[in-house]
Length: 252
Image (cartoon, rainbow, N blue to C red):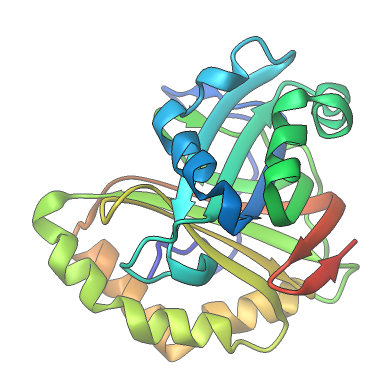
């Protein structure tokens, strides 16, 4: 089970969270499965972290992440699956990064599969390393044009790690099998403790139906009732651009 923003009604729109800095107005999410020959390069991304991205114009926030085996949610780390989450101050800088940044070009060149998603937040709650995304998009109606996306992340208190991961398999299985879920990827900044999920949905109705599912509701109640998280962030997005493929499926 990864922390999930899909539970209940969408969080109220706001431009910032009190006491946090801005993570930007536009987000870019990158999922990459590096070629087997680039395995060492893939591990190097985690060692270097944000350093290769210093000086990228308009960049306000960045996280370089690993993933579970196969790009999923398991405890066994993948040697090739990697993720990037970037916040930009405006859409112009974000689109320029996607089109021309040598850093992203290097990720694509080393990957056998890569998906890039440009998106604006339609609702946001919480923070990530003390930063919060600005809400700059209008949420679509339940059956409005899709797809829509969600990013959920949390820092898990060490004393609750065992309990948190005990809830994981049924919630993850229900997400992978949920009607209308087009993509679900498990990501993480640090093994066990700092976890993230990206999901892409046909429309809001499909996302909300999953939010009401039994395994998901049980996991959320346990996590929040037990105070498992020291920090969490839940964001719904309106994608502006999908470019590439993930797990054999083309998007965009």
